[in-house]
Amino acid sequence: MKFYSREQELQLLERDYSQTDNSSTMTVITGRRRIGKTLLAKKFAENKKHLYLFISKKNEVLLCKEFLEIITSQFNFPVFGEIKDFRTIFRLLMEIGKSQKIIVIIDEFQEFYSINNSIYSEIQNIWDENKDKSKVHLIFIGSIYSLMNKIFKNSKEPLFGRADRIIYLKPFSPKTIRAILEDNGNYSKENLFINYLITGGVPRYQEILVKNGIFSKEKLLEFYFEKSSPFIDEGKTILIEEFGKEYGTYFSILELLSEGRTSRSEIESILEKNIGGYLENLIEDFNIVAKRQPVGAKATGKIQKYYINDNFLNFWFRFVYKYRSSIENNNFEFLKNNLEKSLSTYSGAILERLYHEIFRNQGKFTAIGTYWERGNANEIDIVCVDEANKRLIIGEIKLNKDKLRLAQLQAKSKNLEKRFPDYEFEYLELSLDDVEGYLASE
Image 1: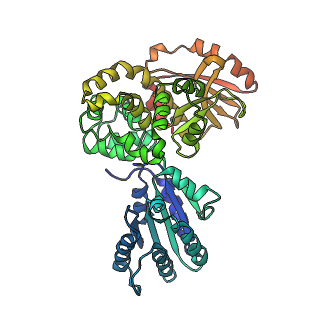
Image 2: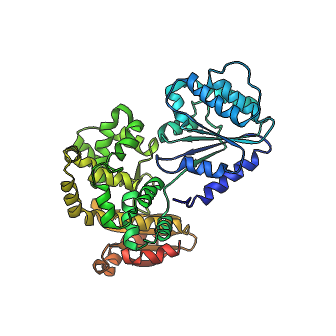
Image 3: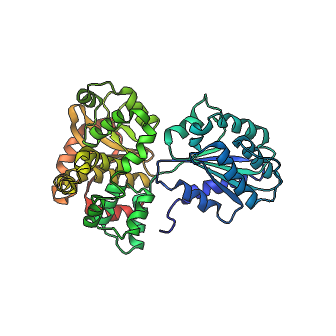
């Protein structure tokens, strides 16, 4: 599959690279697994003098031997004696950068925690000592979000404040998914929606689908729920290492969220456990869950809901993890039948998410969210606030256009009108049929 999107990220990397003419710069690229971090870094570095070093889980001495072979094969720089620690490798790289401008990409940087966590303080000391004398564009890549967050954003860690830029890579936008489908001759609003619903725009999943010629709803669901599907174990693969030994509690919370149990009290009553700390970690450390308040509510307000912000994981917990016993028994027909019964209801919420993302990507609004009142009264699917022009867009979203009711939407908005007395209100009825028009205006 060809390289898509990432124009903004490439521009940021080019900006950091240009600053390396004066002194070394440090860029961090992070984000969930399969999001295309390594591909982005390699795309940026192509046609530039660079080194790529991958931190695999092995002994530091063996790792250094591998790295030294890579370095000496690409640079004519004298090396004396045997190098057995990464500290010396890193000092060597900074020395090379004193005579020439280079990009050094270090992938899976968080793995040093298990190899030798003193490496982070050693890197800090060497960096501080040499960065103003050298011309190295250092790019650290990491796929365990919580650890990368800790390394660079925790004030107690040695590399805190050292990164010139941290790029958090996100999934492809709906517009990019559309481009992929069009390039493969299979664009339709239905194909776009089922792709977004299941993959959330994660690049690696796009690559898998394109490689296998999977584009329609029928083929995608058949491919997803077949024996040896690359998606069946994916949730466990990308999360167990993140969560560690407490993954069972985290998985239980995520399963309930995927079912639409959006309040902390409801989840705690089911699990019979205080989950405040777990929810906070899922939001702050793992970036898998987000918290939502009604548009117009005070930041300190107690009315709030929680949801999984990753479409792929939301689908996986709702339709795979919940029925893991059926998977262990190879009962894939049960999974398909269960999905057929539940998909329509589930799809409605994801269509809302799709429209939220489309409007957010327009870059015209101060805030985009939903609205509801205590007891889930007067729920409104989308509210877009344009403070600059004193305008509010209020929309109802349904898969089936025939089920939209404008008069009911206006009636549910009475209290919103009181909260925004000087605003002009625009009401929209949005269905899957309308997606193409709004995508074109992104």
